[in-house]
Length: 283
Image (cartoon, rainbow, N blue to C red; front, side):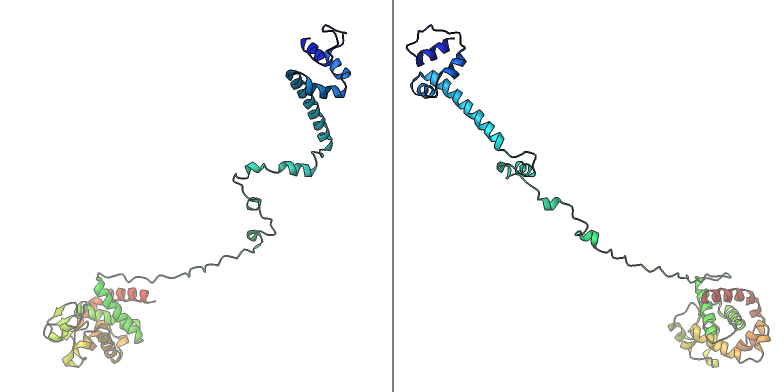
């Protein structure tokens, strides 16, 4: 090989240039050269030879260091080695990290949501069962204004403690006298100063029962009040002896002293229906 001859020539100038003993060149290089020869070759040989030899020496030294490091390296399977290898590269510290404490799930012993005793929800009281009051619906062909006046008569009579029969007599009388409207008098301009539902011309008669102030029933303003007028009528009825056993028209005539005493009788049936409706609502 030309390179071997070059190296041999540089190391032993006295040898013949074509000398060959059949020994491979690598054996000659390793076995025949003493340690001092490598140093001489590194300092005196041609540049190409020095570079090649230096590379070989460095390669051998590197293999020796690796073998020595392998013997000194701790067992890779130990926890310490795993922890050391798990340490992140310092160059990656600039990358965003999530702290372990932020992602770790709290244990049941420290989690307030798991250890806190749940507060029972405030019990909502059940709504009270309310009974809706019946609505007063007009009956017997009456309108709302008439029905409201009839209800005022029934309510006042109950407050006075009058029996049902007295209530029917009072409603039937108002049906005949005013058609269950609160009537003012065209003869008494004063009566029109009070709430009214029409104007009549029967002398100075006013209100539901067409009572006359000139006959002693009371002041005009008071007689225009349905409740006051009812009290006046029922008080007079209660003063009639045996009114409970009288026919309705006779009991009404005993109080009113009308020119048409029999006209009250025709209102008994519708008056009874109206009183029943009013009492049902009042209960």
